[in-house]
Length: 171
Ligand code: APR
Image 1 (cartoon, rainbow, N blue to C red):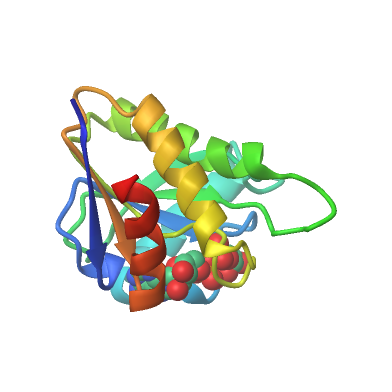
Image 2 (cartoon, rainbow, N blue to C red):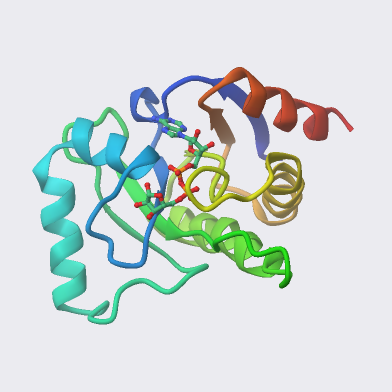
């Protein structure tokens, strides 16, 4: 049974087999957690992302998809880049957010990862409400996480995000 744990802090400091990056389809970096990962992980990560763009991902990574690269100087072994959906009240994109988690878990399994850390995907720049994101993230990981994965962390950057995830996780 894979354990799901919550942590308030900076995902770039996590010593896990893989951390998930809330990237954008260009895979060439950005702000938020994407910026933090590239900043602390160093140029190797961007070089690996550029190589992906030059090979299988010429048109970029599609929303809901996931791909792994080196984690550069980070303590983690790999970075799994995924592109979350932008929140759009007029359209239910929940399935795309669920896909980010499902595909990231699939890539983690391919890597043989035993520990993985997720940020709160799409809840920053992409504007997804935290309580709804927490419900989708926790439900999807609960349904799809399995051996060899032992622990899935959700690393929340601030107390508000932590409280929203904890409220859903406790139910
Ligand atoms: N560790 C953990 N969580 C973090 C960190 C960090 N170092 N930095 C930010 N976060 C949190 C934010 O507070 C938010 O809750 O990650 C969550 C996701 O926010 P964003 O990083 O803005 O990601 P997202 O909303 O998915 O938007 C993706 O933003 O950074 C750009 O290149 C990225 O274009 C893409 C877009």
